[in-house]
Image (cartoon, rainbow, N blue to C red; front, side, top):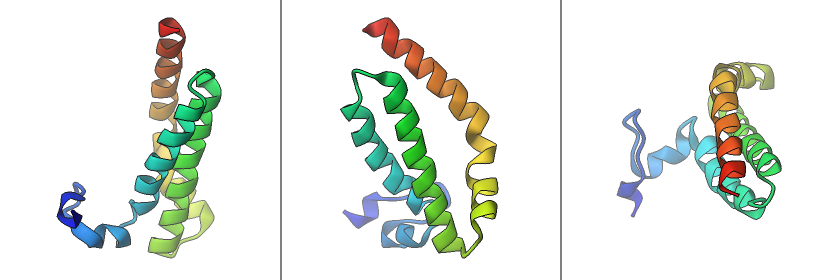
Length: 99
C-alpha cells in the first residue's frame, strides 16, 4: 500500500511523510470531507475547503522546511491564489447551474 503513494518529485512510499507537500495531501482529504458537508451551500464549502488546504499546506511547509509563517505563505499560498480563485469561481458557478 505504501508504494502506491507517490509524487511528481520522485518521492514515494513512506518518504512522502517527510515531503513539504504532506500538509497539502492531508488538507485535500480534510477539505473533501468539509466540502461534502456543505454540498448545499457551495460558496461556503469551497471557501472553507480552500482555507483547510492552505492552512494544512502552510503548516506542513513550516514543519518540514523549518521556515517562518511569512515565508511559508509566500511560497505555498501566494503563487496559487489567482488560479485557485478562477477554479473556485468556476466550481461555484457550475454548482449553482446544476442545482
